Image 1 (spheres, rainbow, N blue to C red):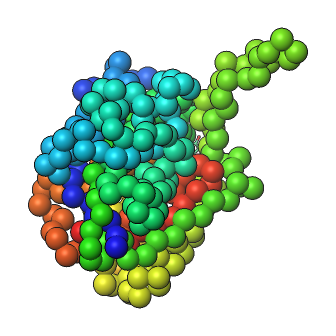
Image 2: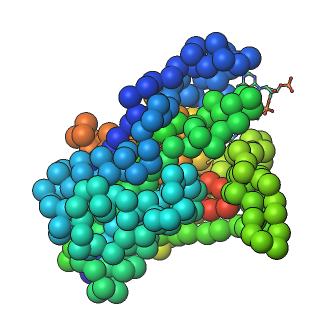
Image 3: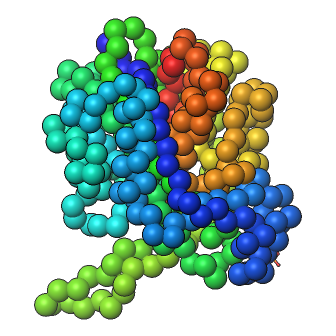
Length: 321
Ligand code: COA
């Protein structure tokens, strides 16, 4: 038994912000951002919420799969930028789309969140607990950015991507890996609201994303190829057997570095970060939806997904489309 992705969907805020737009707000340039990251523009919320974008992406994934919301048994939302601490984003989406029969909860593994959620759904379905799952990665990270920190705020964009998966008889997921390295969590972090109770008062309202870009870059180029190789080994496949590598969209140079380490040509590594930036947990399903819409994902293809981010968290999944 395994699972197969049978529908994809995505949603972006309306407002597209180019590098030139950002250069009007801070000391940066299109040339600097493109050269160091490959990013040309990103979409930023002007009111769209994580739950709203996630709900839209879920509706589109269901439509693409030819399924009704009432059929969903498990609804997982991966996000690190929810509007509400309670109820969780997955429950808000459930109400929005009318998936009343689903068990719904959130999962936060930052930019690896969608991948970890996919593995969670796989475990539930493999165990025979549910037959299908709707999995969404959604972020409005722009509210967690320090817009005076030009080394960080230029990287991220807002958006959502979703997939609908269901039990399948043949091989779907062929191998996966997932890891966390909490001891190195300080290189990419964001503080939540401080403690405030009758016995202790910490006035902190919550912080902004803080990042050591060079450390994160080095971590990604080293650990992601290792995580992909581990998943490939479990699948008894070689890097060249994979048709498409759908990686977390953080930085074009990171993706090129990973391709080089795996010894695979860059043409197998589709990119959309030039248009949408780093959308964290939304990045992988957003790109999957673009590829699906463009007819670049055909049944029987071998696809490798890989995500990495704050935590530090990272992993990979090799599957038959
Ligand atoms: N525009 C212009 N100059 C900028 C800038 C910007 N947006 N951001 C930083 N700079 C400047 C710095 O101030 C520094 O200037 P200085 O040499 O005068 O001090 C110079 O550019 C180099 O900065 P540095 O941070 O060393 O650049 P870098 O080559 O490491 O690139 C990143 C910075 C963030 C693009 C790069 O480290 C990176 O992409 N890391 C991975 C981050 C990531 O993907 N995080 C998310 C993971 S999920």
